[in-house]
Length: 126
Image (spheres, rainbow, N blue to C red):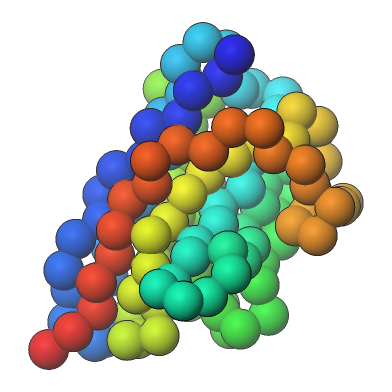
């Protein structure tokens, strides 16, 4: 079973940047689509970004407006989320996950995710 460990969260001022990491153990992620999600207090978990395992195509939540970038380092079995121009509304616990598929075509609405890691908390405050 794939296990994800998210890291890189922390406290950042509005306008600042963070890079989150998602490292997997138990499976090689080379061909799996990996998605980033976030959950703010009192809100439902929402999709942030996704990268296809087949061709590297990416998808983003419309609300991000180009501020976030997803990338993958296959040698490290790690997926990253670069977050720039952070806003207070970006504060949440961020998670990575896969539904076992290879594309982001059905992300995020139709993804069925069996396992969630502990996530990494991002706080945006002055």
